[in-house]
View 1 (cartoon, rainbow, N blue to C red):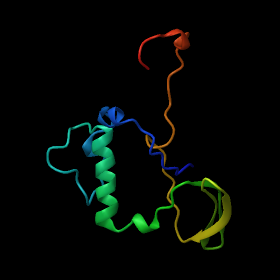
View 2: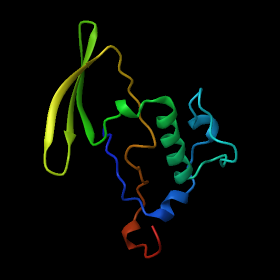
View 3: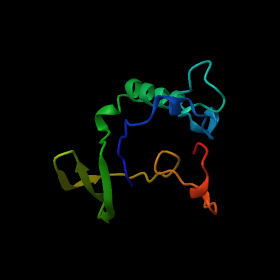
View 4: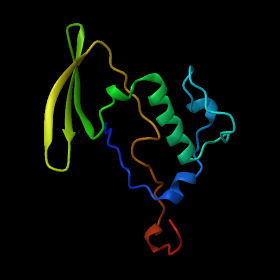
Length: 125
């Protein structure tokens, strides 16, 4: 699992439409703001997540640039082995939690279909 923040997204990509509706993507206790597209753009989704963090107080618990290397059960706790990276160094450590939530989805790595001769395509990708 990679929780790396990447701020290198070109501005024009922030307005690309997503493929997940506001009904599927919204937290139960925090709906999208009025006027959000039915299928939010990347920019709308980014602003929603920023707003959710600010309003829920969870930002202080988010660890960016952190990769999970392993999760194992130890009695009544979960031991999570993580690596936090910066430009100058990486730090490995284990943290203990009562609960662990494993999530996958559209915010990790993009998955592109295998298309024969795609590398020969000269148009925008």
